[in-house]
Length: 84
Image (cartoon, rainbow, N blue to C red):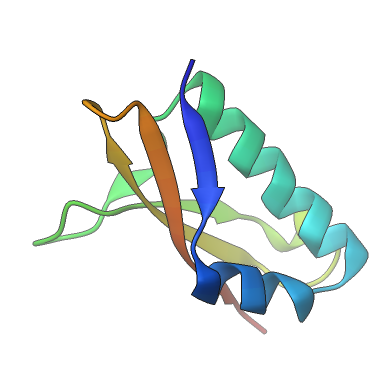
């Protein structure tokens, strides 16, 4: 099984989100543990991004930027970007 973790920066941003936005991010985090290759690859980087639509997050859209390391069987959520 894959482990998915939040970076310190992502944890800080998570505390600033609403309860429904936090729940949407947690859903993505758990989903990464089952299917670590999701979303799209960011150009020129090893990072990937999963977009949470505003309807699913209860207001703002959220981009979950993460990196998956196959050998370590881990995904690290680097940033959470909340939009208008």
